[in-house]
Amino acid sequence: MIPDRILRKIERCLALSHSANEHEAGTALRQAQHLMDEYGVSEIDVAASTIDRVAVKSPAGRKPPRWLDHLASLVNAAFGTATVYEPRPTFESWQGYFAFLGEASQVRIAAYAFEVLQRQLLSDRKAFLNGMHKRAKRVTKIRRADAYALAWVAGAYEHIVPVQKTEASVAAIEHFQQRFYPQLEAMEAIDRGQRRDDQRAMARGYAAGRNARLHGGVDRDQHKELSHG
Image (tube, rainbow, N blue to C red):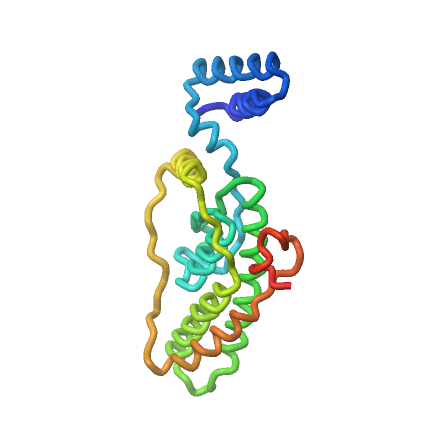
């Protein structure tokens, strides 16, 4: 693995290579090329070194429910990030984390956005679940609460402005994943399905999701649709 200090040094040299001082720029570029040749560093290695990772704790266990997976996808669409789900074993069960990957300027905001929206979604889902008829079967309650949560995310989607990812950004994130998650496998989220009589739950969830809010910490000019006021 390429030492981080070498990648940082190459980054600094490449940044200086854009200097208005031609002599300084030329020297910096030659130094960067020398280091890249010496350590076998490619351009994609340098690009991937700008990718950061921020993990957000989630109540999901070994596998996340589909509605939380969709919420992570919503945030990724808004900020141009990617997500890796990390289930970590505990003494009794599993603790889930959504790890957001992306450029440092975006990934921290994305993680914050997910944390805020997840908290609202969990609160709304719990309130919906507690408001259901006490005689309803537990399996029915859980299924309808999941349908509510999925629709909630769909409602929140109305407020985002998707970021158009560049090929370079996608390649950098993929290279980062290959480097730090070499054994990453595809995972299917938990899906309890839906029935025709779940439509009322979905309608309520969709309406609630349209009222989702982010409070501070988000650049309003860049993501004003997601921050909604």
